[in-house]
Image 1: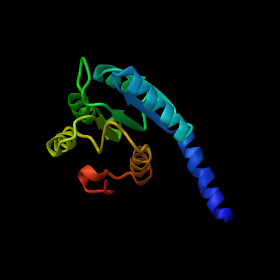
Image 2: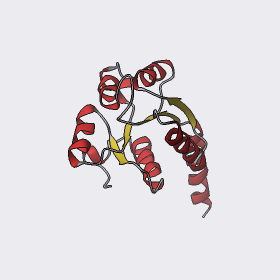
Image 3: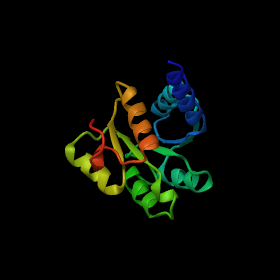
Image 4: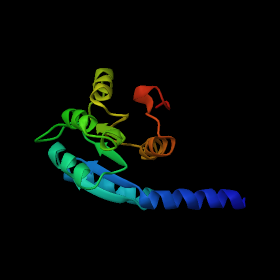
Length: 152
């Protein structure tokens, strides 16, 4: 029992240090994502409204994970993911979770080809899915279901 409590506290400490970049142009959706992330834990959250802003945020203060909408103004999410993957390491290694209304199987494959590690369709009904995929990518260091990791 004591060890379980220690593990929980250790995970909470790790979350306090986790930096998340939320890239979403819709203000309402972005606000919901940020509020839900705050509910899930104490994260350092930055926001961007388009792909170009996201790239600038990554260069200034690299996040631990990016939640990336794919339909964005200025620079869409597909191209943003591709450009992230061409950055010098370790920036190119940041886990990317596509969060999108695109729900076709071909869209999932296209997101993977662009460099996204995980894929979640909107509307997000169960935020435990976001939490599980973030934890998988952050703690296991492995790529997610798009590359053969944990199941959806």
